[in-house]
Image (cartoon, rainbow, N blue to C red; front, side, top):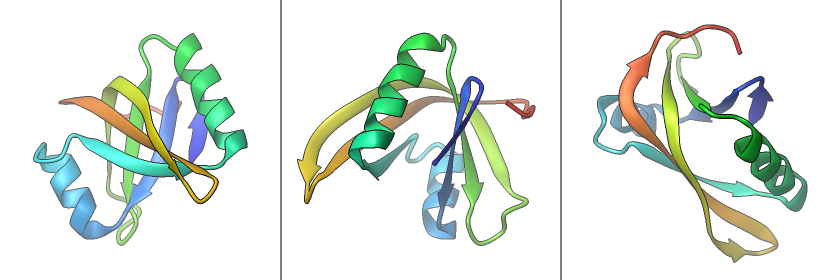
Amino acid sequence: MKIHGNTIHFKSDGYWYAKEKSGKKPNTVRLLDPLQRSQVEQWFSTNDPAYIRIVNKDYEWESFKCILTDVSCVGQIAGYFVYVFSWYQREVKYEEG
């Protein structure tokens, strides 16, 4: 996870990347430690609109960027917080940020 300006960046394996980019799965589930949780909560509450960029972990030159519609903590496991990041499927032009 990286946060740059109004965009949060994640990497997904090729299988999941294809589903996420196609719109079959317009969300990603991530485990966040307490510091990351705090960063995400603060970031999402102060960025409107907020964007998500997903990078294909297998081919890092492939990515897409969409408008985030929801960030939800859905539980905890082994000291990590389970977060679901959901987005509006229409892709936006990628610009650094």
